[in-house]
Image (cartoon, rainbow, N blue to C red; front, side):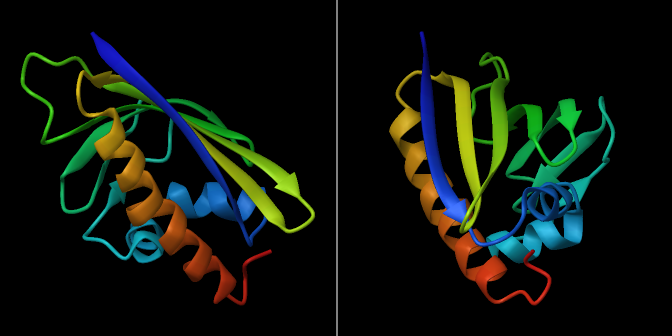
Length: 136
C-alpha cells in the first residue's frame, strides 16, 4: 500500500519566480531554510535537498507551470519505490497558488510528509518570498 497527499498555499511571488527558485540549488536551500540542495535543471536531471535527506529525478518540467519529480527521502526503506511529486503553479491576485500532489508515499508516512511540506516548505516559502524584493 502507498499513500497520497495534496496541499496548497498562496506564495507572494509569480509562478516563474517560484519555478526558477525551486530548480536552483542555492535558492532552494535558502527558501526552505534547510540544508544544502543541488539541482540539475533538465528533464532526467538529479536533485537533492536538505543535505541529501531528499533526492530524486526531474521527470517533467513546464516553466512557470509545473514540476514533476521522482522523489524519496532517507526514511524510505530500500524496498520502497520512489514516490511521485507534482508541483503545480497557478497565478492568483496575491501571488501563486502552489499545489503539491505527492503520491506513492510509503504506507504510514503520509501525514508525516504532509506536515513536513507545510512546516519545511510552504511556511518558509511564504516568509522568503514576502521578504524578497524580486518576489514578482
